[in-house]
Image 1 (tube, helix red, strand yellow):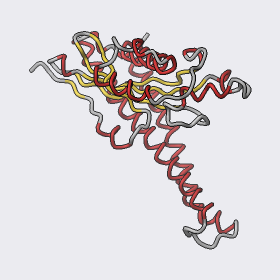
Image 2 (spheres, helix red, strand yellow):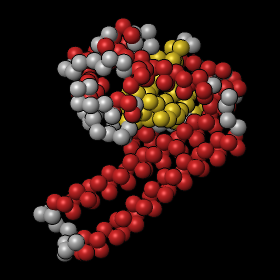
Image 3 (tube, rainbow, N blue to C red):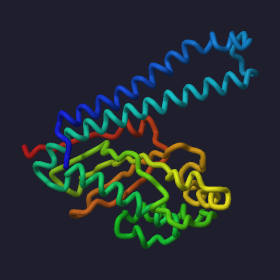
Length: 250
């Protein structure tokens, strides 16, 4: 069941409130950083002071991450308004259906990468994406995880861009997924843990990340959605360029 407008606004404001709280903490941390360093006996920030640079780098990274989070919330809100108009003309734009499509393809990609079987995704992706996926798969060196589908938990799914044209061949949408490895997998002993690297080499090569974020770019082919591109290193400017558009009949 889809949420009402009032319920969606409540969820959105809750998300924004969480992000703003994060910014307040970061701003206060930046403001107090010189005082904290002086208290620790550091007179000034220099390139020789490696620990200080690490602190500053961590704060900047956190701020960028927070900004990206706000952009995702803002874009998804705009997409929601566009989808409401688009769905009145074409049920293909049902938001729940698009979210399901994003999750469905996410699991297909997971399965194809883990098993090395590219035929798993052939019917769901464009020829361009299939070629790029095949090239990356050829560089894979790690072994598979026994049960990859049940080894991950999806934390969040959003639609952050919707472009509905009168010519359906031009239609596009962008889905966002936030996920993590399941707690059962993370807490296993070292005899099992190395297998986690089989998937993590595809996702930024970091097996200590708390969660992962990905953006999936879809294009419309007939009445089907085909995956055309994925991005597991979400960029600030690329997100800003994603637009929501509804072409009127006039």
